[in-house]
Image (cartoon, rainbow, N blue to C red; front, side, top):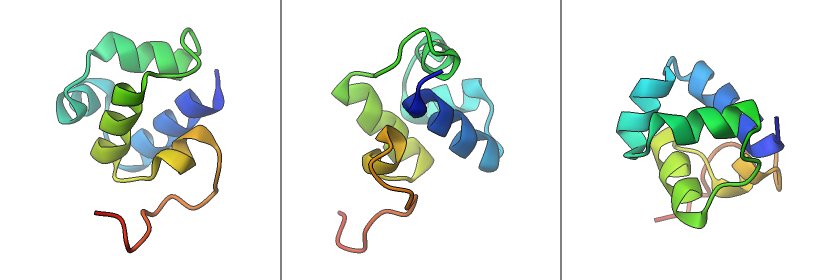
Length: 77
């Protein structure tokens, strides 16, 4: 599993979400989320990354491994 999928899974579980609930919240297909979490797809499209980051309320930088800070910056719209 790649870092993106591992972090999606970590945050999803910490928020008490299962894959179907995250899929609904992000308006993505469950298969897309499973493929990322299981490592079948290492990197998502930009659209998918944005949808997941928004649904999980974390920064894309955190999901892609650029930072350890999960919280969105204060100046983020």
